Length: 120
Length: 120
Image (cartoon, rainbow over all chains, first blue to last red; front, side, top):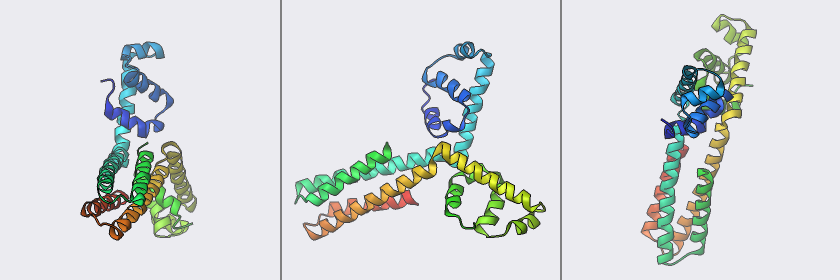
């Protein structure tokens, strides 16, 4: 279950809505790859307690995604920017092969910088 | 206070996290421009009750923005896409003036369509 990419993305968006405790446990479990028993020992609670706490946090994040659709919106933006990047590559290629305009080269560079910035 | 653009944007992002009752009252107040007293009468609660409920909903949305920064992220994306759009305009202009490549025209069109889609 560790390194679940879906949970990692949810955490990116909604992690700040969880309590510090919840974030810690999820972090131990998914990022540090500790077992439920190991986390339980560290935290001084039962294995079941850790399990329930992580499940509840996950549930909260899935519910937020169902309401706000942020991960989904982010995925669409990312894909759109990748399409734009490919088009800019095509423009650069044609520009280099035929004619070569400095203004087009410059505009392509600015677009690529903006895309990097937005994907950051 | 009605038609507060900041609240309108917050509602776009976080409205789904409020209760139906909260959404209704905020809607009556900001979008339908009803007074607190009018809403109170409609809802069968006190004017103070309506006031507190709206304030609490606003507070919740401001807190979510402080944690998740979605409105801020959205504003940055919007601005970045506007910059990209301007660059594409420049490319189109140069392309039309000198040389004229069908591939560049086509790529500019695809980028513009993507931008529209992402800003939608």
